[in-house]
Structures are given as C-alpha cells and as structure tokens.
Image (cartoon, rainbow, N blue to C red; front, side):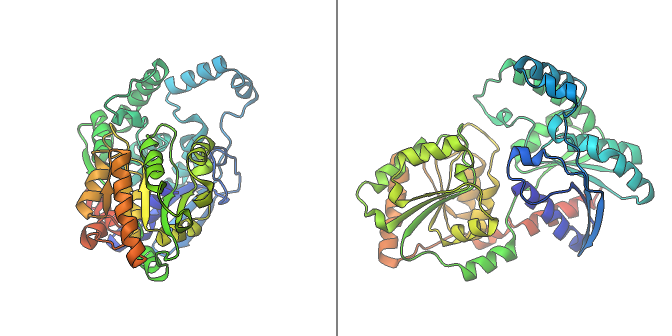
Length: 413
C-alpha cells in the first residue's frame, strides 16, 4: 500500500538525519486487502519491537460500530445516516477506522513514561490527526500533521458539486479539523493543493509538500535485474483505476492503436485493476481478450516485475482536479519506463512527467493512439523502448530524499 510505504520511508530514513522515529500502528496480519480487512478486529496484545533506526509499536484494534444497537441501526439506510451524522457532529470522523478510540489510552500511558520530542500524525483517516492533536496538547509537544489525502478529495475539483450529505459531512470535518490543527507547527501534504486546502483551516501554520515516492535502492536493483520484454510490446497499468475517472481516452485510444496490429505481439496488463469489479468488467468488455491480462490484487513483488518488464506504464489523469497525483506515478518514475498519462490532468501529473521528461500526456484518444504507434514502431525495430528521463530530477522524488527533506524541516521546529 502507498500509505504504508510513506510511513515506512519515515521509519527507514529519519534516523539518518537526527530523528529516532517511534512508529505506532495497529496489528496487521498482512492479508488485509479490502475495506473489510482494514476495519477488521485484531485484539493481539501490544507488541513493541526494535528495528534498525526505529521502534515499532503494534496495538490491538477493536472492531468499531459493533455494539448490538449500532449493528441494528446500521441495517437501514435512514438509521445509518442518522448514526453517522450523530458521530460526525460529535467529532468521531471515519468511525470504522478509529485510531483515536483504539490507541489513545495506550499512548497516554506510554508517553507518560517514555517522552518524545515531536508528534507526527499521518492521515487519511482524519482521526489520526485528532489523536496527534490530543497528544500534542496533553504533553506540550510540537505537532506535525501530514495529509496523504483530504477529508474530501472532491475539494480539489473545480467542477464538483457536493451533495447535501457531503456538504454536511465536510462541515463537521472542517469544524473539528480547525480545532485539531491549532497546535500544529507544520502541515505537510503530498501535493501543494492538498497543503493549501489543509492550511485554509490553519493559516497560522507553516506548510510543506512531501510527495510520495519510490525506494531508490529497490528500484535501482529492479532495473538491473528485470529488463523490458523483447518478445512482446507491453502496455501496463499497475494498481487501481476508479469508475469516476475518465477511462474513455485510454479505451478508445487502445482500440485505435490495436486496429491494424498483430495482437500476438502485444500484451495489455491491468494489474490489480479487477479489484474494482465495475472497472475490470468495463475493460474486459472493450479490449480483445487475446492480448489482455486483468488481475485483482497481487503481491507487490509480482506487480513490480510486470512494471519493470513493461515498455509503457499508464495512468489516467484527473482533469479538473488540481492536486491528485497517484502514488503509483512515483514508482513509475523509479522504474525508468515511459509513462503515458491520459487524459492530461494539466496539473500535478503533467508537471511531474514534463519536468522529469519521463513520458508523454494525451488529451484525446487520437493523441493517445499516435503516441502508442510511435513507441510501437520504435519497439518493432529495436525490441526495446529508449527512455529519456532526467535522472537528477527523478532522484528528487525518491522516498529517501522526501523523508530527508521532512526530517530536516522538523528539526527546525
């Protein structure tokens, strides 16, 4: 998971720059690959382990909204709306993933005997921000609030019109976030628009972009060991595509591209895409099965192998959204394989791909097909695709560099 990789990068790298991180999380079995898995109960007792450069605290996690009366209320749509409105109104956001409720007592006890110098909370979910603010106030320690996503990413859209229910939910989110961000000395986010939205609620606080990234050593090793395929021209999507993304440019563009090709020479991979059944079914209905490979979630090592063996790595942009850059985009940079974004978001993704010279962007299916045809023609001659990415610019997006930047900023507090 991209979110886990972000926290792991802080654990692996902060100690190189003068900080010793103590990472707090719930117990994980390792097979939680769905929403139900993330919300599942695990009551194993607290476990504290020492690792090179960091300490890991794994805590029991109680299943939320599991009382008999809550289960009964949640059986009806009206009951669910009523219960969730009451919870949001009382400051219980993201009720089914409530780290605040599960971790607070343990951490109060822990910090009473093992004090720290700073408290960093990373969210979504936003109850981690609540927990960080509470501990910051209780122990008078500087608070860093890190936003991987917003409470509502549609706030980044220029055209989205929220429903009445969404407006009410956002009202409560923002009411409480304003309180929780009062002690924050630094707000960080994965893109500038996300930082700006968070700072709208806490204009007194310094903001900083800390992007997602890729593990520099891991990807260097992968590039040495996994070459591009020479037997087939490989187009791959690694990870999730969403139903509300514009997938028509890709689907019609691939149809145009494939029209006069020998399909035995081409492989289209959609790795992890079938996790959302609606998207998997759409792709299967539009593209020829003879060259199509669609999977649900697979082990990361398998996904990385497909990524590195590919010639083209695709992601759908988010036109009209000013700050969404998929975490997978940064791993595409680490892979040093040509990236194709369509439709162009004319925002963060365009900036990254353009400044690193790591690929191309298309607004229409015709532009998409033209780019693919050019690359395919090169492959038919060379049996590989040249890559012209700017190594120095790409290196700046390594997780090691982003963690370093954050650590040095924290030490200024």
